[in-house]
Length: 150
Ligand code: UDP
Image (cartoon, rainbow, N blue to C red; front, side, top):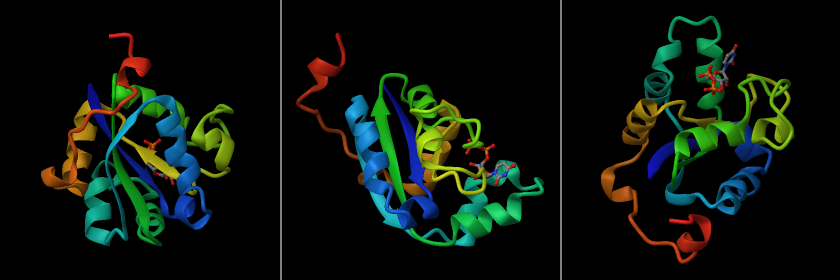
């Protein structure tokens, strides 16, 4: 099982899409093992997006991600990192396939409603930035035998 970090960005919260997005992960069979609403400060935002520090869009990205509350989650499942990346779609919503979160619910790269870790290594880093170990729950879900063959 893998764990990945997912965040509904301020535009997703403002547009009332949090339930829709969370519901997609639940319906897929993924397990939400941590979730909270928070308003990210610039320091955490800059740590989270440290890899983009030299990019021309960095300041706008930090303004965007700190512009309102977000919903942060840890999502667990088999191959969860790649499954969730596939579900959210390409970074640019104009190129994201229909059926993906960004393909169905967004229009602009700078307002692409959701974040998800792009590798197991970034998942571990991002989860530890946003969650303390005691905020992440180990629990069995009743449908596990119906979601996975074995
Ligand atoms: N972004 C942007 N302009 C760009 C590229 C990225 O505003 O030209 C923003 C966008 O919100 C994106 C985030 O920066 O989701 C992180 O970029 P990354 O390439 O890591 O894409 P992601 O992993 O979110 O698909």
